[in-house]
Length: 416
Image (cartoon, rainbow, N blue to C red):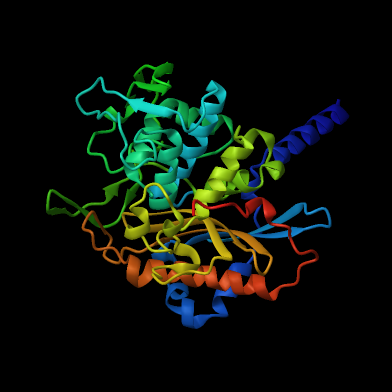
């Protein structure tokens, strides 16, 4: 009887270890902190009061064997799932992979025309897109606009296609914990209206090939406890001297962001449960537009004129507006809102044969007031991100690798 109980306990322990999320298995040591302290000219102010900036960092070192199989070692700095931060535009990467997966399930090509209709007063329709090559909207073109310019409306359209309940339940089934996608972005409609999503249809050669009716989420996905931040917030031009509520806002912890990145770039090394059902063409699309510079873009054509190389490439480049080297690529999705600045990137130097993953968030809101458009991105956030990326890259350049990696999978052809 005792032996049976011991065996049962061992089975339960093994099962718990087996199902522990891969991204949570990072080194609980001081590696990153020691690395930052080697550069006081870059990080001294931040390291004096790290709790003020609420920094969280995950860095994954990648080594490959003779068969080019990757092996990972992840280090964390101040990673705290209980410390809420607003994920801003980083949630948009989730919308792309879930939309691609849904299309594959339906047997619809991502370039197929997607038309959005309305059934409620607060909803808006989309029947044309003059920025696309054929003048019509599609999941692929929305994904381009998200990855190249972090377009909010493009995310909202994918959110409507996926549906709030399907969005959250799919991620939950895949083992993405504490992720809550509750609302459209930069949209004035309230939380109840975000539970409703528009009717959508896909057309090919003038014929409807799939029609999705308007939907309503039967569940709510708010935080289980109130999430209150800061000293106050602006409401209609008036300062309200009480914490701002993020309880009904999106949530995407840094561990889950890093996990998503690994699932996209290393699906073969990701637990099957956490993978997305994507085609090789889907992966090539993601690699292309996550790393493509605006000047290399054909459609939307105006991106070439409106955006500089380092636009939204916070890690390594910060606010740099000069031409960037073509052999060094950030495959990333960044975000900034409410004073939170984030970036989630697989970084590759094809010339030096270097690769690593880096995810970070910093709170750059000196006065603790939200919605006042007085955030410290330029003074604090962007310099930190640039310096963090440089510091990790310099470390990567200095360390010896058993084998030079073959990064051919990620060397994609750009629009031009």
